[in-house]
Image (cartoon, rainbow, N blue to C red; front, side, top):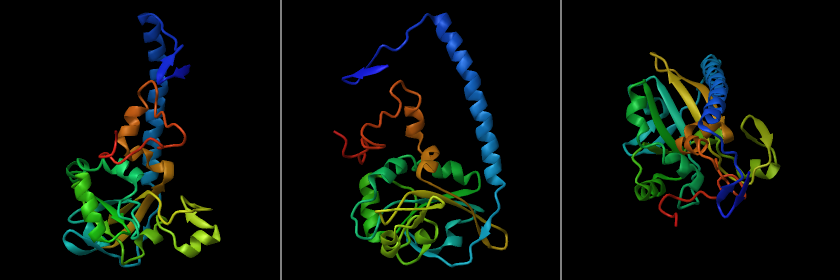
Length: 239
């Protein structure tokens, strides 16, 4: 396959019977992938938990809330670590690409005993105007006054970055950013004890972006260009 001016040239074109034969053969691969994904999801749920010992208090639209209070009346909590540092006036455009998928999630997750929130280090005074500009309604909390994002591998001190040994995505690596993307999951038992059950980062959050799954279906795929997400803009800044 070659591309010229955005068009695809030289791709095989066959009869309907040949197309159906190839598609049916590929369906077997897709079903195998689905079974493997289901197995992986089950093994994820079987991973051991760790107790959350530290108390975290966040700023949000209803004032101060602890991590335990973020669950509301549910037992499961999903946190998206949104890259937005205190010295910035806009959240990360790549996290914003993910966040464009969030608005409609809440009501469905709530009916499966799950609460969803985003958390950033930026103060609420910066989060709220940006959230309004983007037209988002999901709950977004500030961890400006606590260590939450640092403790869950989504933020790094200047000293850590300068050392060249930042711990991110469960390994030590060089990092020239103060914040990175990720998702963390928590469970709260009947006694109110909170447990950290899972976290994922980098390509691990691909599955939280519905737009990417649709792009994976089309002939050009993600068509990323110079580097992954080089094409991404805030949704109000596309030409």
